Length: 204
Image (tube, rainbow, N blue to C red; front, top):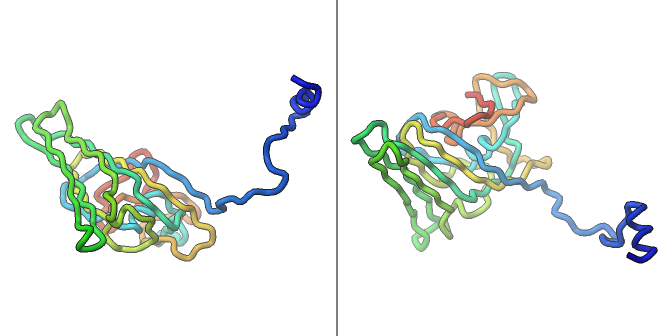
């Protein structure tokens, strides 16, 4: 090690880096896997707004309204596990991804088990050309439909862009909320509240 390198090391400086500030992506982007448990096996539509609200929301009006922390969301992948209710019965989980056109139709994936020892297991990424394959802002458009019998564990991996004064945050009416408190809503729209978050604070 030469004398200048020793001086830089002892002073905590480095010759690496930039003499000028570099270009950055200023929006805060995060990725996280969220976990939910199903309480109903009916086919249920999932929307961009429900994903945004499930990823983190804040109370803005007491016992009235929560608003999402993120303004854009993209689905990375979804994984589900579901055992049958009892020996001798079966259980099926499915994901139906909504297409964008006639050339990009809906595509459904499912798995079935007949064993209480081995759950039905599904791991899917949004197919190319499906709505869920693109970044989405708040809306009630259906991105995909889930069939998940009671007790199904649903893991949803999302990429998110956090709000920076944007006006397109998702919001929903609730019965209970404290201003400034963070809540994680159900995966499905709050009116149905079938897929509740695991180990996170929620409200309805």
